[in-house]
Image (cartoon, rainbow, N blue to C red; front, side):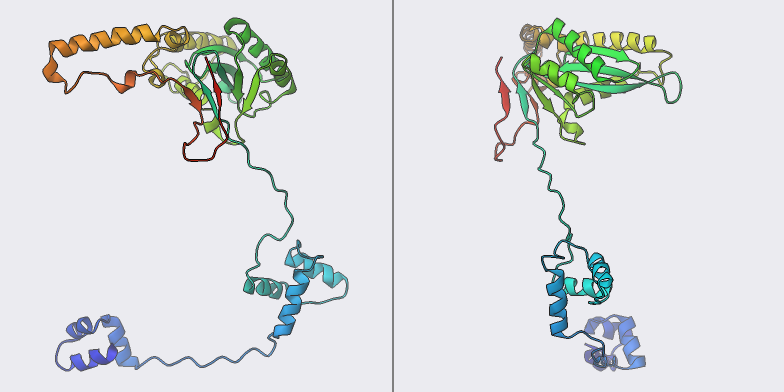
Length: 338
């Protein structure tokens, strides 16, 4: 390329010659001043270079039954204490790297993958989800614990309780009170908090023949209904920066969850209120809503491209926690019949 540049340079400018030759102007100028680049001299092998046999011996020692799960630096120290110098630590790593063996060599515990919970409910009272969230108290570092249980199908808050602390005994009493009012579900889902996995709660659910389900560690998406309810609470304009006392927190929760159950139109249940779905009024309300839409369509058909049947008003037949993908070979989910 530079030869073509010099031939063109006789007839055209430096810029044009570089462009026609396909080289940068800086490269062409540098080679014109300094001349062609020198070929690097061949490097001689270091006098202290290990032979092929020595490298093979090092690799054999590192892969021996004694040291196969030991780090190179541990091998170096062990042999040194025994009066044997095999090679430097850097050389040990270099030999392993040349053979693509620079990996975790120690035997480590292999924890089985956590099974993703897959639950479904086709009606109220089948699957309850519960969790505990912190409510800020009057002073910094003071918090109250709000125990909240929700029916995943209807999104109805079946029970809530505000306490000064979190404990297995309080959780046991809370669940007992909820079941006394709303009946015993088939499944209770929760995360892996100490109260949720406590022996008191486990024994209570086992005695009542209720299946326990838990989220995977550090996976908040496995408990979506409780997390979404907590977000609705804490992002509501009425949620205060701090509660003056535990009684203030209890009063707020009583008022808020009454509004949530009976007045809040939930997008996940066809813009019905949780109470309407939980107590079986959603179908009648859906008929009334459709009559209103049909009347609007009859009065002004030109305003609609088709008969109005908004998808946002449809109530799903099934509520899922981690709905399985149809194409994957996931184990069959626990489906609860109404």
